Image (cartoon, rainbow, N blue to C red; front, side, top):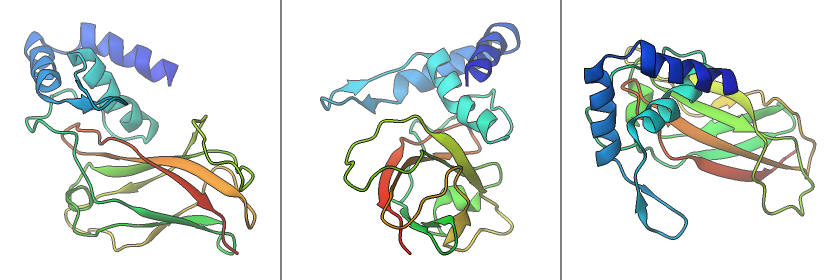
Length: 184
């Protein structure tokens, strides 16, 4: 992640045009986030550029240098996630009609952590990339889709993780966290 951030900061200063940086500043000024107290907060243009592109680099997707023209974070329908011990896989159920699934260059990116005892109710990380489900205009994926997590769990262990949607235009959704019990 550090290398990705450093690379993106260099791209911001050395590769992006003044117009592209201005567009990211405009996107940032018009895209609010809600903090833990419920207050709207705004990021700077470089913060939005790095925020949008680090997960794309982790997922081996193309970097997006042009700022999104739509001023939101690319919302998506809540995803249902279970872990099947029999399959050894995370199973993601999503709305096949969500915009990200019907768009080339978009992706669902998931991260998960080492399994925990089932009595643990709060987990903040660290996470490791579990995988990517690519969207496609020509062949949208059917739901559900499976993904092998970086750490396998056994029955009754709890898996924590997070999911985000990266849209082709660079919008990155807010995260959907999950804490699920492994099923036999």
